[in-house]
Amino acid sequence: MPEISQLPHPDREDIELTAVLFALSDEARLALVRQLAAGPLDMIDCSALGADVPKSTKSHQVKVLREAGVVDSELRGRNRRLTLRRADLDDRFPGLLDAVLATTDQP
Image 1 (tube, rainbow, N blue to C red):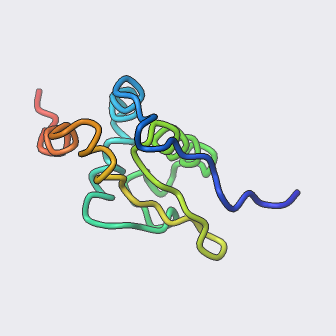
Image 2: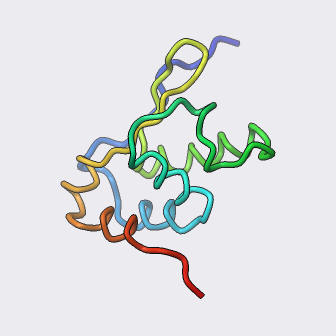
């Protein structure tokens, strides 16, 4: 089966707040977004998802973020390069990403 090089991503105007909030509500996905805030990463290098997490789980977490419009996933050789869609999110929901990234989990 041939590999799909371009996965579907929502256009900027189609990014929905509820989908973004759902995607960011998971601790592992939020950790990945925080890691991507520093710059793009190859999926294999994303330590936020954990080394012992199965590949299928990592793929699912990235899929949720991608389909919500939070990250862009681009094929680079045999790996996928993940990029935070900061400009798109800031355009659609000004200040949301900064507020989410500034939060810390405190009891």
